Image (cartoon, rainbow, N blue to C red; front, top):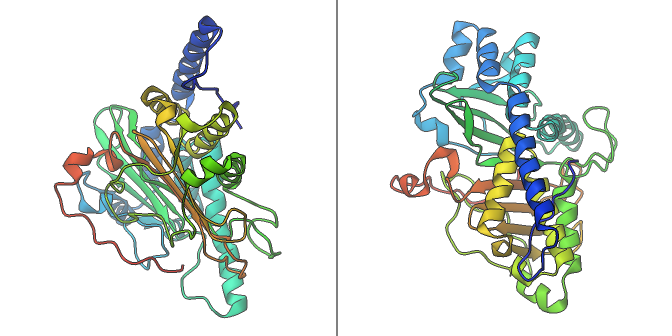
Length: 372
């Protein structure tokens, strides 16, 4: 894990201003260096495309403005846009994995791969119970490239399957959009032994859940009364098929009403949610939050205040929205052991589309949440 940064908080006298300025400069320099050293996105995309047959390329490559670019979801769908790993040979799958790694941090890449591997456990558990309704396959993840990958110009990438939906836009060699970014996990914690998949104890989204519980537990009764917005957790995140994040003012407790220790936990939680992306992206997201004022970030909670019972939290500031829900059982029947989480962009807009522009079109009709 990267070392957590400490952010200025309203009402705190900040000492050693010069040192703080130097640290900020060092952080920016480190992010710039990391960006230059990170795998080249266009090169990784071209290398992947070079391994494909003409028939496969026809499935993978679409025009940048193709309507399917904003058609996203994380449920186990029968069909999706793009070419799935199952349809690739080993060389092509390795190239596809290098492309995935080029768009994520090491942490994010490891989590994405683990999420795919959890499908092995779901498949085994549902075969054992005889209650399987979906095609569980760790290779059922689809790759789509929109436009022509190049150092100049604009192009996009979608990597999607059950519990994973990653959507990127590159413009002029820079990653200008990386939302919606959805990471899910079933099981959230591997509690049963299986002959396949991740081992017992694996917890792919551990920090994203544990730090939220830590922040909730640290709240005083008056703070908790504001932060808890409902006794029962919702069935799922909001707007899972919309081209933009749901509208509405933030709810819950603002960081302006937290003590320094609580703000530190909040910031650690924000970093845990952000750090799955390339360094320059996570640093940019966190800097945007800081520039907009950490005091303007809100923490909202719904549902149980302990693990094993349905719970939900939301983080929202002027520039971003995070939602996290754990209410469904896992494949083995363990309650509230099935996570859905998403990061969305409230400033630049998801899919690289300004929110005002995206709203001019008709929003996709949202289907009722269902267990999956």
